[in-house]
Length: 236
Image 1 (cartoon, rainbow, N blue to C red):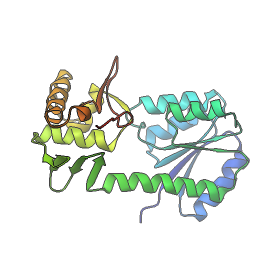
Image 2 (image 1 turned 45 degrees about the vertical axis):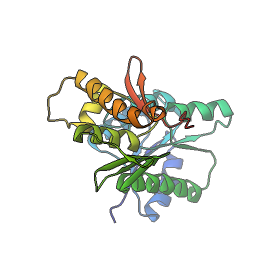
Image 3 (image 1 turned 135 degrees about the horizontal axis):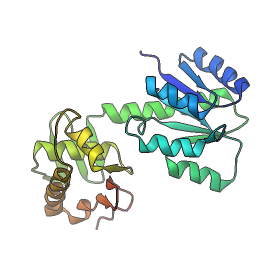
Image 4 (image 1 turned 90 degrees about the vertical axis):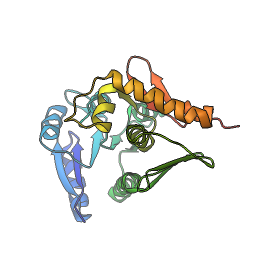
């Protein structure tokens, strides 16, 4: 099994050393940054599997750094665990709202942190390798290239299938049209951004014909693009 790479971003060298020893004993490969500038430099050269991010950092807050990570296409899918001495509920909510996958308060036991890291990585791996994606009664089967809603098959083209697959695998995140183009069409294909709107309308229409409630899963995010959100799905 390939070793997972962890980027630790923390200005306290003693914490980084403690974590490095524990992580390397657990078969992780470690990268270290003491501030935001070093972290950006490392991310320009490598793509870690997960990031451990301190809340308070020289040169800016961990929250600001996290916001930037989630805006950039090359880093937005990297899971992040916040390391923080802040225990106030508002701080925790702020971190999770910005895009953190989990948080742990200092001081903490390395074994607990590693267990949380493995849970996140395992969840992501299961999602990526799953042959079947399900939201309510909407089921997408990757290998058979089949989509059903309830007991009815949905007849859609290959582009709509790829688009639905992408959105179902990445729920609750807003993507720009350019990002959707890169993920669905690929980076080496020139397609105008408005093409995304055309295929979104087609996909919504196919779903709406079977169950209008499910066509609302693909939401327009004003000023950004689109988001797939099962959170408010109401089925009669």
